[in-house]
Amino acid sequence: MSVVDSPVLTVKDEAAFLNDQAQAMRASVYEFLGRLLASEPDEQVLQVLRNIDEVDASEGQVAMGWELMKQAAIKAELSAVKDEYLALFIGIGRGELVPFGSWYVTGFLMEKPLALLRNDLAELGIERQEGIKESEDHIAALCDAMAIIIRSGADVSLARQQKFYKDHLEPWVSRFFEDLQTAKSAHFYRSVGFFGEGFFSFESRLLAMKS
Image (cartoon, rainbow, N blue to C red):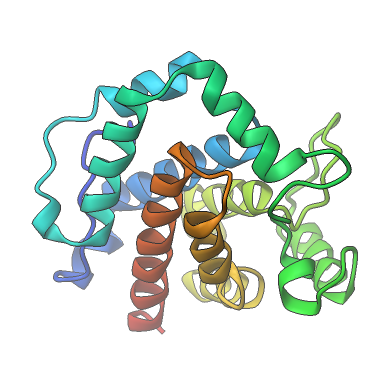
């Protein structure tokens, strides 16, 4: 399922999110966010956003976020977006933001939250990809991990999915997306921050409702 097939997510009908189609939609959103945050976007990624169908922004922050990303992608020049990504996340020595869970939770990289995350990933059978330099608590890696967990279906219980999210994303992810919206270097990525804040607020509510 494409991330643009059904961009509006709500928790009005909790039961609807027990079906396979809805789970696939959630996983697709995680994968798309992971792609936006893992490296500089390419023209294909921007075109996906430009091709989003008309969205009723009154449906809430997630819907409005899709619309903001669409409009930002329409206005964006690829070279400028790539430069923006580098300024935000790479920089000279360090980017404006540090998109790692350990940093947000402890103020330092490679701390206990990363060790706990690695234990959980090993238990889930999720392995670090070859050639990836960033540690597993990078926001993009965690988005990819959540997508894998969701797509695992019955192989990973809902309770396990809830625990992974609560332990490794919920303590810091909202602050990261808030920081992304206010970062000096953010232009296109300000819309990504707005969408991410709304999506993870949705996820927190949804997973709490199912506990």
